[in-house]
Image 1: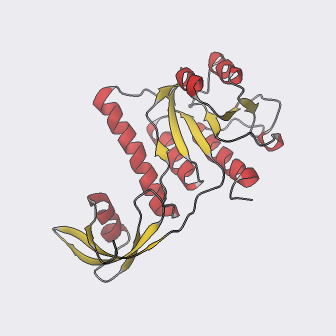
Image 2: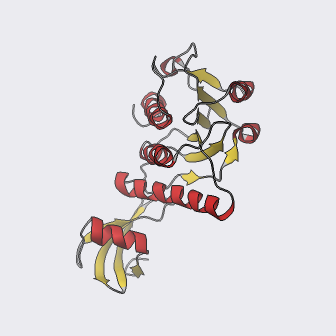
Length: 230
């Protein structure tokens, strides 16, 4: 509501005052992750926290016309964070972490919940950096074979020795999933399971890419061919 005062969450307050170095009277832009953004003015920053005044709403949309899910084999911490961060910057619609034969260990219970919360925090930070105001959803991890059995759209899977390149593929119907293996890649049974679900096997050049590089490069090419990079 225009004119309302809002206390920023601790993370957002830290970003505003410690990273951006904003002070009382400075303008800033807020978003809640559901679309559009709010013009605001910082009115208080002290030990009690940071308060802002809402000045107006702007129905700005920076989403890609391409609906694509990054189905990413769980990788080691830094690699997974990188893949999620760059996928957010590159306009991915949602992110599905996958447990595979060769994926990095995913802790059970509360520790696993904290890992998922951390990935969702990476998305929010990436949105703040790149100007997205609609945050892509990070879904709870699933076993790759279980997820393949429930996925109802089309798909692309990166296979280093595939005959066809990504650039030579006709656009599959939406929604589209980009399936990326973990550091050790998919095993043969997982690739066969993807192909049985009519995923298109493609390669991305003659070199074997790191998992986080494959996610970023693949999404960049998809946006260039069919999304907002054209």
